[in-house]
Image (cartoon, rainbow, N blue to C red):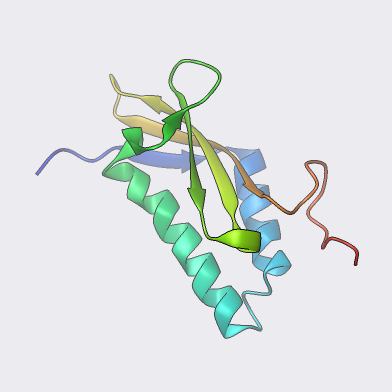
Length: 106
């Protein structure tokens, strides 16, 4: 079995993850809770397959999508193969505005 990578979240990604928990109402909705748990699993899964995401605009920057339709989230991360390290740089729900984590108005 290959050695696993260490995965960490930047302060910005951690704040986004916490904000998403409220955004999808993970504490109150079974569906939101399952979605959030799946997002957490996708992030933790980077320790085993860090290069599975598509290359982004810069070298060693990758992104993966988690979810479907209106519940899609982009996870952007940096891979350091030499040190076997993954840093999650950003987590963004695709229906959210880039500058905040509020629910879209209807």
